[in-house]
Amino acid sequence: MDPLYDALTPDDAMEMQLTARLIYQTRENRRTVLEAMGVADEADLLGRISRSEIPEHPAYEHYLAARILRDTHDTARQLMTGALKEINQR
Image (cartoon, rainbow, N blue to C red):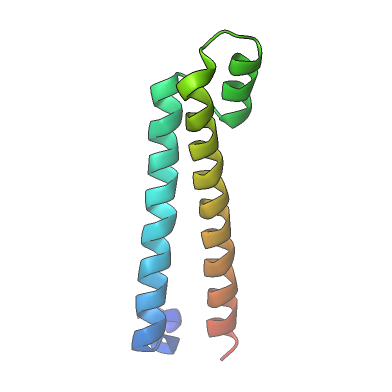
Protein backbone atom coordinates (compact mmCIF):
# COMPACT_ATOMS: atom_id res chain seq x y z
CA MET A 1 0.00 0.00 0.00
CA ASP A 2 1.12 3.55 -0.68
CA PRO A 3 3.02 4.98 2.33
CA LEU A 4 0.82 8.09 2.15
CA TYR A 5 -2.10 6.07 3.44
CA ASP A 6 -0.02 4.67 6.30
CA ALA A 7 0.57 8.23 7.54
CA LEU A 8 -3.12 9.18 7.56
CA THR A 9 -4.97 9.15 10.82
CA PRO A 10 -8.72 8.57 10.59
CA ASP A 11 -9.25 12.31 11.12
CA ASP A 12 -6.74 13.13 8.36
CA ALA A 13 -8.43 10.66 6.03
CA MET A 14 -11.82 12.24 6.70
CA GLU A 15 -10.42 15.73 6.09
CA MET A 16 -8.83 14.60 2.80
CA GLN A 17 -12.08 12.97 1.71
CA LEU A 18 -14.14 16.06 2.48
CA THR A 19 -11.64 18.38 0.81
CA ALA A 20 -11.46 16.16 -2.28
CA ARG A 21 -15.26 16.17 -2.49
CA LEU A 22 -15.30 19.97 -2.21
CA ILE A 23 -12.71 20.26 -4.99
CA TYR A 24 -14.78 18.01 -7.23
CA GLN A 25 -18.13 19.66 -6.49
CA THR A 26 -16.89 23.21 -6.97
CA ARG A 27 -15.20 22.28 -10.26
CA GLU A 28 -18.32 20.57 -11.60
CA ASN A 29 -20.73 23.27 -10.41
CA ARG A 30 -18.56 25.99 -11.98
CA ARG A 31 -18.55 24.05 -15.22
CA THR A 32 -22.36 23.81 -15.09
CA VAL A 33 -22.75 27.56 -14.50
CA LEU A 34 -20.41 28.45 -17.36
CA GLU A 35 -22.02 25.96 -19.76
CA ALA A 36 -25.46 27.37 -18.94
CA MET A 37 -24.22 30.75 -20.10
CA GLY A 38 -22.41 29.33 -23.13
CA VAL A 39 -18.98 30.63 -22.15
CA ALA A 40 -15.56 29.13 -21.50
CA ASP A 41 -14.66 31.08 -18.37
CA GLU A 42 -15.53 34.02 -16.14
CA ALA A 43 -13.59 36.53 -18.23
CA ASP A 44 -15.52 35.52 -21.32
CA LEU A 45 -18.81 35.88 -19.46
CA LEU A 46 -17.91 39.30 -18.08
CA GLY A 47 -16.78 40.43 -21.52
CA ARG A 48 -20.07 39.36 -23.09
CA ILE A 49 -21.97 41.20 -20.35
CA SER A 50 -19.83 44.34 -20.85
CA ARG A 51 -20.42 44.27 -24.61
CA SER A 52 -24.19 43.84 -24.01
CA GLU A 53 -24.14 40.55 -25.91
CA ILE A 54 -26.15 38.97 -23.11
CA PRO A 55 -28.47 40.57 -20.55
CA GLU A 56 -26.79 41.77 -17.38
CA HIS A 57 -29.39 40.08 -15.24
CA PRO A 58 -29.08 37.20 -14.42
CA ALA A 59 -25.73 36.85 -16.25
CA TYR A 60 -23.84 38.87 -13.66
CA GLU A 61 -25.14 36.60 -10.90
CA HIS A 62 -23.82 33.64 -12.90
CA TYR A 63 -20.50 35.44 -13.25
CA LEU A 64 -20.30 35.95 -9.48
CA ALA A 65 -21.28 32.33 -8.82
CA ALA A 66 -18.57 31.07 -11.18
CA ARG A 67 -15.97 33.33 -9.53
CA ILE A 68 -16.92 32.16 -6.04
CA LEU A 69 -16.82 28.53 -7.14
CA ARG A 70 -13.40 29.00 -8.78
CA ASP A 71 -12.01 30.78 -5.72
CA THR A 72 -13.37 28.08 -3.41
CA HIS A 73 -11.94 25.38 -5.67
CA ASP A 74 -8.51 27.03 -5.68
CA THR A 75 -8.53 27.46 -1.90
CA ALA A 76 -9.54 23.83 -1.34
CA ARG A 77 -6.72 22.67 -3.63
CA GLN A 78 -4.24 24.78 -1.66
CA LEU A 79 -5.53 23.29 1.60
CA MET A 80 -5.18 19.79 0.18
CA THR A 81 -1.63 20.49 -0.99
CA GLY A 82 -0.66 21.89 2.39
CA ALA A 83 -2.22 19.00 4.27
CA LEU A 84 -0.49 16.42 2.08
CA LYS A 85 2.88 18.16 2.53
CA GLU A 86 2.36 18.14 6.29
CA ILE A 87 1.36 14.47 6.29
CA ASN A 88 4.37 13.50 4.18
CA GLN A 89 6.72 15.27 6.61
CA ARG A 90 5.59 13.17 9.57
